[in-house]
Image (cartoon, rainbow, N blue to C red; front, side, top):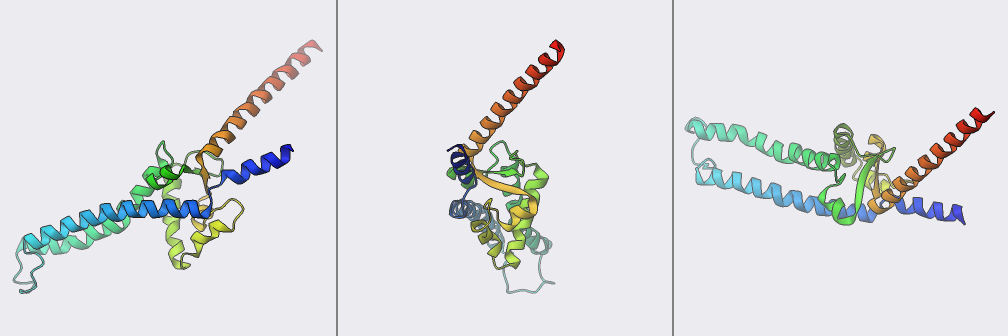
Length: 195
């Protein structure tokens, strides 16, 4: 009976593929909404300032137009690479251990010892997601087939995505075990002094 319950608790610990997929969809919606707004503002400024006027050549452009044109690729690099990296890494490194999408679904990212992620590990997990693009996103689907429901990026970064309520039960069991172990060690030390 105990083994069956323990097995069920571990099965409940790891977040499944569809739960993770939905969390990713929520996060992408938030990112697209935010980044799209920023990109829209940049484009609006460019249009209102006449920076996107294609009726004149580069040589005829004002210094402001040339600077805007030179900075535009960096703005879009910032929007495509830096902001998503900080979004995922900082949220998973935070006290919540989860992005807003994960928070809504009650799942968190942890390291292989079920502890909160460091910023470096959260960043490594994010950058490892880029490997999934080279595998036609099969790296994400791997989470549906692995024992601990890890995607390729989780395997690379040595992380898990777990259900928060099950993680809390696991931590409670660990504390109880440590208390029992301490009590046992104290009893053994007391018996040693008696002998």
